[in-house]
Length: 368
Image (cartoon, rainbow, N blue to C red; front, top):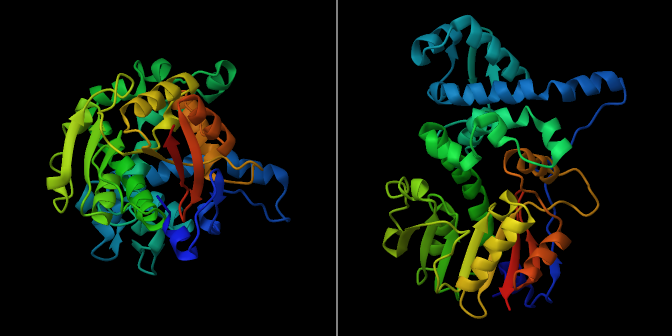
């Protein structure tokens, strides 16, 4: 299969080639310090960074952006609308206003800025559920033990939550719902880019492995009206998927629950895994990839939607996500060469890496 970018150029990429697109500055995580700031001040900003993430998470969880969607409100009005203490919410909004999330007028009413609109519920580009997930116990508590993860090389979920992360979510359905929706936030971000850069014309059957509520798969099926697909995920995830699947493609979906470390449904010519391989260490990731290899049709294609650690270590969200994987699950982000190696060991040949206008790249590999 050819990418859309290659079709425009009228040529086919050589195996192993990398297709790059310019990345916008906003897509790169970096810390800059004006020359006039002393090092201690810059370090203080780094140290207190978690205060800001919790402030954003609180605003998301309280539904403040939704409450401001109809227009500006004072902290007293927000107190009546969403049940918060007026002075406390004023102080929260004052901080977030200073960061450009909200804006404040001369009457001390607060309103949405474009940045704050990303905390609205169920709107294109929303990251509200992601903000809640990253500041909720399932992620927040293990991060408090990062130094122990660095000492041991092991995740801290069991030590802090009393269970592995996905077992924790099975026991805490409200938080699990936010996590699944957060993955949907990221899937929506990735889906538009995936169908923009990759040609699905010849796909007959596709499995979204670990596909949650099928946002990514839905975009693929819309791009190819002749294709059918399967959402494959854990039982507690599949159990919540039926009511949120895109009705436009519902007749071409099949919902299948199971454990991809045991097996993957057979017979597809394309597997898509978005931010699945990065959850796991080399042993578990290799087992997953081998199960995909066994289930794919001969000559089938595997697409991994992942962040890639830059080979030159330029500032990128991938390095921070790599630590998130370490402390939460024991997984990792990988360089392109590390993906090439793990894919080869699992029976795949890495064909190309396609950059997108998002933090994710599309890694195409063929079953050999």
